[in-house]
Image (cartoon, rainbow, N blue to C red; front, side, top):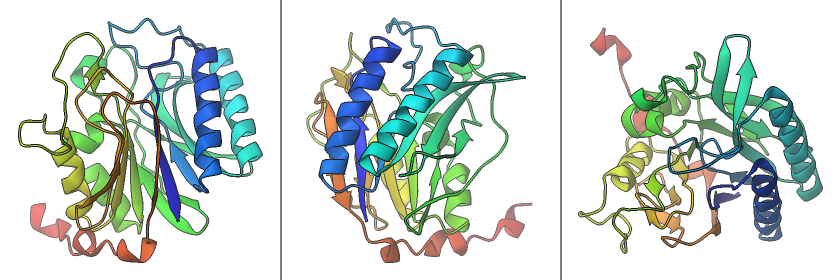
Length: 262
């Protein structure tokens, strides 16, 4: 299976985000990718103070989701699209999964919010497994995947071969310009995604925005912890890698003995 990870710049508007998504989905499909994942809260954009993202609404989000469904069907590719999503209880931070036929298969919510997000979204309460072309996968969103490894282990124990990890870590204003993936002087984020793969014996595919000062690269990690592909720091685009689902045995995750921690 070929999977793709997008590294777009922060959208200037919902329209801009959809135009970038269309370009990157096309680019991934041209390389025969079967799944593409975008960064956290890509539509309308992550609401950090430095980014002037367009305010979302239920109507705007439904229209955007319909547009992504059309793109997925046109390119015959499964799309993982993180978005705001409105419910009776409030706004959720979700990652929609759209099949290669343009059908919405469901979404994964961000259940463990960062403390800074408590006034932006409400936390979700469920976890889900999805499937594309016979391969099961899970999703964990940003803070969850970095600081709550249980979110990844749960998916691995449900026989997920890949966990996708949309996130938003970095700045266009200040920071350190990284030069070497996984360097000991880098922030810990790349080391964390390497461990999520190793400790569960699965693939871990992490999507970040293109920032001038990113704290991590969009990366695809093999079940043995090897980084098999990553995007150049500060570059927008899409990376594509071949993965072998048979190598994602979930061995270490399935040996976990939860009864020892009660």
